Amino acid sequence: MFRLLQWAAICVLLGRAYQHWFWDAPYRAVLWDEGWMRPIVEGLFGMSWKDYAASVQVDRAIQWGMKILGSFLALGALIAAFPSRFPKRVWQVLVANSVLLFILAFLYYKEQNYQLGQFIEYALQVCAPYFFYKRLVKGEINLSRERFIRWAIAVTFAGHGLYAVGFYPRPGHFTTMVINAFGIPQDWANQLLWTAGILDFLAAVWILLPFPGRAIALWYCVIWGFLTSFARVWVNFFPEFWTSSLHQWAFEFVYRAPHFLIPLALVVLSWGRKLKLHRQHLRKS
Image 1: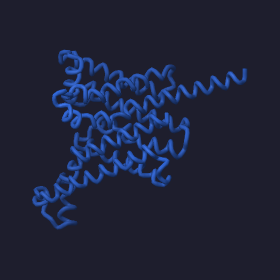
Image 2 (image 1 turned 135 degrees about the vertical axis):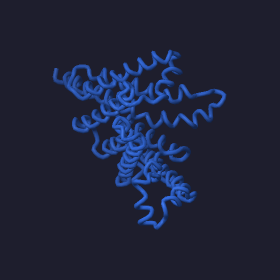
Image 3 (image 1 turned 90 degrees about the vertical axis):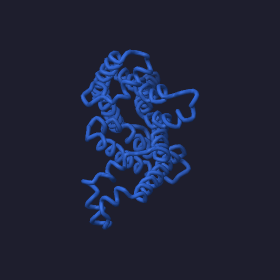
Image 4 (image 1 turned 30 degrees about the vertical axis):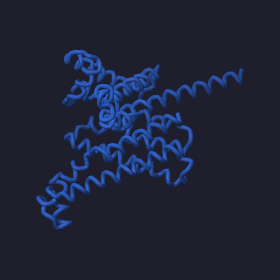
């Protein structure tokens, strides 16, 4: 389980760092929001909103700011990869990384007109560095921390489900990915997504409640989490342009790795506990 939590943290931090270095992140959703920023720009900096919004220097500063934040996320990935080589107090960078990922999730939430599903589907990505930090500091996962992890899995897949069933307008690329991945008509793709959304909700409930066979729900999250993550690369990969395909899409798979690695970590945790109980039973007998 340690390695799975470790890789979940490394992947989300490296993937998001790559995004910040080479692509874009939604900081302009706030920094270019006149309602939020105009009082600050004009009151604190004495600059007109028009000049601020059109300023090349401001845009360049935003770009450099993203690269700096990307480097901070990459530092967290390095700490997660080699924790024993850093003082324990430096491990707290992982907590700060989770805070930054929370802010990033909020910015996506704002950018999508405050759709709750958009916000909660980032739960596993936000929590992955924190979960690994707690594992480093506290050792084995107790029932309380396991419950926290289950909630993060549940709300992530519930967020997926809200889009899949059409509670919010379903992003067009969802349907396109299914059509390209399976070679099926659009109607079938929409029906498959709706079915997957219902299964997302069922899995979320099953994971949280003490139902028998919860491992089935976790395995669903592992498999579906992997498929929906890898689909970004699979359907957008062109062998003749393999470098640009990977440059544009591989990082999206990487930062979604917690969607299947963390549910798998709980499966492994459950196996470990059952094996421990079995060994104790054998000793007593």
